[in-house]
Length: 280
Length: 324
Image (cartoon, rainbow over all chains, first blue to last red; front, side, top):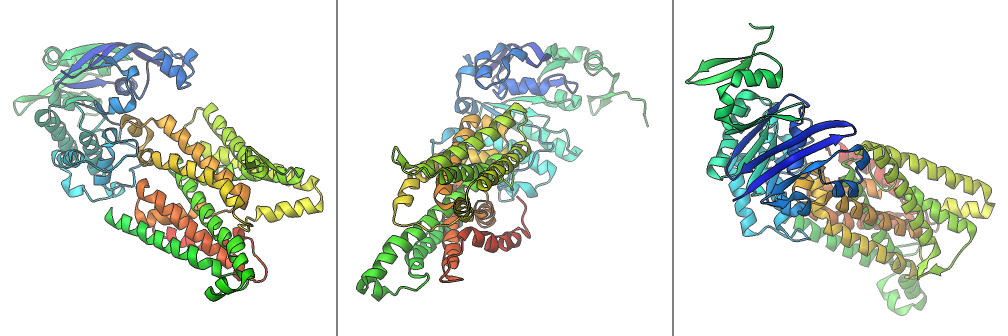
């Protein structure tokens, strides 16, 4: 039932077009990885999907973005309603967003307080106390993300991996059918990358949440997600299922990232790696 | 959470006790018996001491809450009504009305209050316009713009002082030191609406303040109307500061110090921090004013002198093991 549709989404800063005519639909329970090189427009697309960047001309003018310099086109629809007609609270009940963690100052709250803040869209204007439903959602999110033992810790005392789990726990506590993740594993060690990967899997297998992940880690993208959207210079290079992508995975990856890729058999699966000059 | 609420109740009790007891202290201590037997002492108590203590409480609390709001919005531990130029603007506006000698009221608001409000608003608009034209959302840009505005208005203030006669200059210098000497309840009543309206708006946006600490992108995707909340908060803080400065002059340091003190005790949640800052700020300024009245009696020392004198070392002591 739930779905997000992007229709010919175009976004530009000044005269530079960041993304152009992106069209794709994310249905209930689907998992999408948006891959591409740095600057291909992955994060910009994600921000358009959750309303952080507005592609609506009227709203862009209202928010005093110098509209003459900007070329915005297209629509984002959430359950067939244009995102421009939804209030931040209404969007927040549908979509949770976890921004890039690198360089982000951790807020001075405990993990449990941070999760409680995520229930804001469901409260009154005065942000009254937590309802039983809120508390249930917070406990569920802690268990789902395996952060129960961190609940009373201050966010600014957590390690990088723990912090990323806490940020995702916050998004899980928001209780939305869609979860948007921007480079969730980028600065993490293999152990914590694996943790985050399992966590994302639990999000859609146990909760039925649709996950959209921006990443340039191709193995993470292909192992954890069923659909791939590949961007090259802001335009759609590939949009479809993982199966279709893997028919010519090496060719696709080499074109997307402009380096030669190769594949290795490993534990009955495949590992993709790029061939650099400095092989050991 | 429970400890926080308990702390607020404690603070409220302490504040109530001080409001009841401090009016007895002054140049000469008034005894309870005298209050009922001596008409003159009763008059001093009711029209001089009590309003003075009440206005110290309101001003201290208001300034502390404004400091908290500015620090929260700009995510910068150095933000307060003074570093953002709002207080300097208000001072200049008020000083102009003192110099020009215009008195009276407009729509029931004293001219000096209007002057201070206009000055505060002017400085605030200057800072916001400047920082939005640079298209930088960095809090450092806004803070730098605020410091620039602060110096700009200080210079204007000095200039106008230099041009005026001895009497005008003395009045402004004395006023700039800050003080809560009032006669009767008129001043309190004239600034109370600004403080009350400001506090209501700020309380309604307490959740937004919490979310700003997590970052504006997270705040917006959590359902906060970021731009509207920020503008409402800044507007509220500006009218509170404008109102307070018009009566008490620029009382420094309360807005900077009290929020840090409260965060140390109560954590970072603004639902608790707002009442905590209001009460602690009020208590702090009442105590400072009690010192001001008694330390060199019969001379009244300007309370602005005391706040920084007591507050400076205290802040350093708080900050020893604390990171914002």
